[in-house]
Structures are given as C-alpha cells and as structure tokens.
Image (tube, rainbow, N blue to C red):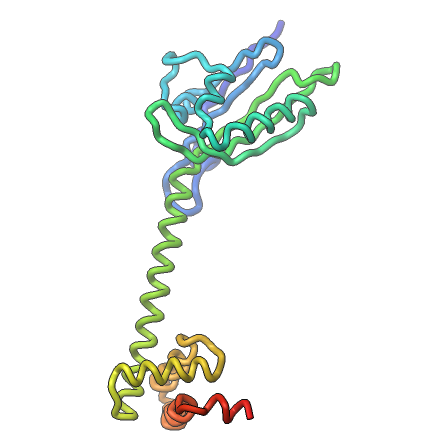
Length: 229
C-alpha cells in the first residue's frame, strides 16, 4: 500500500535560525508528485506566501506567480533543469506574498528519480532570509558609521595636537596632516593615528616633538620635490 508523504513543519530554532540574532527563520517544506503535478505545502510554506492552509490550493502556477518578476525566469529554468536531470538544487531569490510583501528566500531541494530514470518527485525546503539579511545590512551600516566616526575622532585629535604644539589654527593643522599624508603616500587616518598614539603613550611621548617637527617639515611647499630629487 502506498503511503502518502507527510509534510513536516520545519520551525525548530535549532535547525533554522540566524547566527546574527535570536529570531527564528520561517521555513516551509514542499513536495511535488511530478506524474500528476500534485503539490503539497507545509503550514509554514503557506505562511511564507501570505496564506493560511485552506485559503488556496498550491500549484506550480501559484508558486511561480509569487516569484519576483525579475527572478521568475531563472527559477523556472532551474526547476526545468532539475526535472530533466534530477539531483539537488539550491537557489536564492525573491518572492512577493499575497499581502504584497517582498521576502528574500533560499530554496533547496532534490529531484528524485524513479526506477525508470525519470524524475518522479521534487521536494525541499524554503527558508525566509529577509530578517537575517536586513539585520546584516543594518549591522554593516552601523559599522560603517562607527568607522567613519572613529576616523573623524582620530583626525580631530591629531589636529588638536598640532594646534597645541605648533600654535596654529585648526584649518592649517588639518592641511598639514593632509600634506603629510600625500607626502608619505599613506592614508590621512594613518598619519593621524601614529601621532595620537605617540601622544597617548608615556613611553613614546619623548618622540612626539620629533614627529610633529617631521610633519611640519614634510608639509612645507616643495618637500615632495626635494624628496623625489
């Protein structure tokens, strides 16, 4: 007697979760009997597409209708290839659920061959990566802002050191750092960080005067030409 496949809702936090946070990733399973094109979805698969079980009957046409228009042709090509050759597949793409929300998902599955060498079943899992990717993007943005803020802070500290040591204005001190950066062919923040490190280190503070004088010398007009000559 043939036993109908049982769809398992995959929502366990230990199986599908993000290393970037505590939120679980919604994951749904699917099973397709190729002979009659009977499609079965788990409850979470309905949820991913903006439905509840009983709202719609899952079909390949419904599945494709929810693919993002820009991603749909590639998704169809991958499925067509799996139906011909069988084997595993994995694709990252976007879907638009019944409520108009765009989700970024990873679909992984397998085309299973029968004894005659034809693909009889296609099954797999779809994982919603939207929240994970948003969190990663937000963290990258925060890191970039923090890095920019840190750079400005280091440059401002170095400018203050030159203002105090050489009794000059803020604009002149900044231009001196810029000129030294160009003369040494290193980033401005590197020049600034070296100066700040000397000022903040008790052991290296004796070298601060020498460093300031070197920066003053390298920033003078013609310094680059003399070095090149």
